[in-house]
Image (cartoon, rainbow, N blue to C red):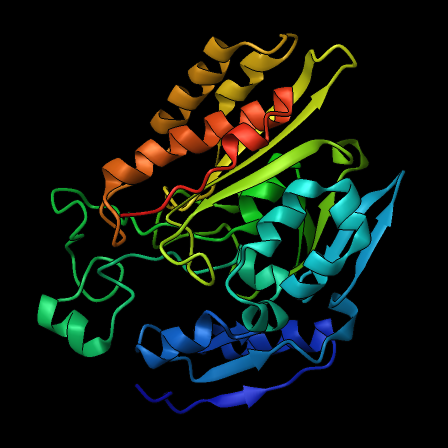
Amino acid sequence: MALPSFQLLRPVSLEAAVDALARCGADAQVVAGGTDLIPSMKQSLFSPRVLVDLKGIRDLDFIRFDPVEGLEMGALTSIAKIVASPAIARHFRVLHEAAKTVASPLLRNMGTLGGNLCLDTRCLYYNQSAFWRNALGYCLKKGSSVCHVAPGGHRCWAVFSGDTAPALLALHARLQLAGPRGAREIPLEEFYVNDGIVRVSKERDELVTAVRVPATSADWDGTYKKLRIRQSIDYPLAGVAAVMRKAADGTCLEARVALTAVNPAPTMVRAAERLVGQRYNAELVEDVASEAIRTGKPLRTSASTPEYRRHMIRVFVRRALQELWRGDSQAVSAPANCP
């Protein structure tokens, strides 16, 4: 599984990187930490003629927090720096917890926030060697007209498996992009497309440059629950990010829940809005947990069964809301192992 031949460009400014992408067109792909792209290239999932290495653009590596302006992070900020940031740990607990679960310490040192948000979607029938895929006859996402997950359909169900995206969705983050037509900013939720092939609403010659989290999302209680086979390194089989803001008497003022690794896009659970104005109520928690398994639609895209992943979404939403709403952390911290 050797890397294909390619030309490596190393721009040192955002303008030069955008220009390189515009000149090279469909032949180019960007690389930052390379923790997702390089293994995929070895599997012949991608064979770009040109790689545009962004690591030299120092201006995209930063973390800034202001109580009035909120949090801003450059796209080239490593996951390790997010974990180590005192401001993020103190004011944005859900993001801190999610970042801690990304892969391993070595991969967190290399992997970037922008890369984690732009991960390619994953599937049991796609993320294999070229020999394996050829023996199967390929799949809808790569070289065939058949999706082996849902053979009767015409849609790719490969799942998005990033950990930071659901946390940032729950925090109402916004994404900054730059391209030949200028800069723009969009809600992170609008960035994702619920299709395993299309993935994101970003032009090929655009770059993610930064993420902004509003000051109004600071200091919420938050937690992230992740299901994976190996606790040390694996992508999530299901992930739940939850945040809540409460009054002194325990009344829920605002609540948000987001899912990852069960759909082609990270997804908000709208039923969490039903908790607003309520005191802790087990039936309400169960109502949101039940709605979450209707929002998340895991199929046979991983080594675990859809039934188990769906069940664990419900368990994780229940645990997260119990922990945030009534501080029941000890009662809900028991690990859930994947069979």
